[in-house]
Length: 379
Image 1 (cartoon, one colour):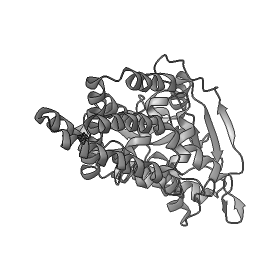
Image 2 (cartoon, one colour):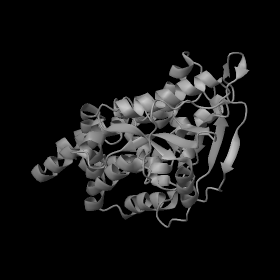
Image 3 (cartoon, one colour):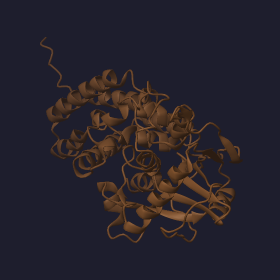
């Protein structure tokens, strides 16, 4: 569970390693100023799986070329891990020079795309002032939420605030659930996909009507109109790399299927018990995190029907040699697995959790047969 928690902790984090810069409020931008939304490509590290969003302000007359990034956090925050899990970790914006920004992505071999905003000069000035005020006043600090508040949603919010209207809204893939939208980003990262499939609850099964991912924003911007004109008519490629997924001997579905197949075919009491207790322990973690965390994505996690915490009771019944208790507990969990199957039959993660359901079902059926009280035959 420590590894899983660590992956979850770093799953959504991004921090630029360059020195921040800031600008005073008295700078008047020239008519040559360009403001744009930068969409940064995905990477193979956990923190980069979903890409990144930032705002660029470029004014050659004033020698300004700066990128505002709402994805920074402080690793030295007291109780950092628990604050992230709780959902009250503070993120904030930083400003970096554009060359430093691009050099970082060149180094990481991640693509960067630019969409210039087609807005008048006074709104460019207003956006520039809003960004700098946000940095200087502390308004850029926000409590990170995976869907509701992140680098993308914060960029959308400050642009809409500048335009004094809700111009930028989700207008692409609104018929897909958040869970379905997320899945393509896990290509080549099987266990990250499995981990998010089981740790996320009911909220990610809702239709994805809110902008929360960089490339979702990129697609929506292409269709946005402001003052009867396209807001971002052109999508320019600054740097582009093919996202090559590194080969892994273990992070693939084959090791997953092989491990579960071995558990089924070896069919040893100790291995079966270890498997069920591990499933129960994961379920206990889901239960704890559902009550403790303010991340709405982790609440109402019906996956505990499969990762059922009551399985921990097997330890007690085996210790007490309570055959009837084992049998009743097994029947309860079999019913839970059946209910779980019908609950997720139309959901995106059915296929990836199905092998776990089959493994649990076979082990539980075997336990039920072994512990069913036999009725003596009268001769």
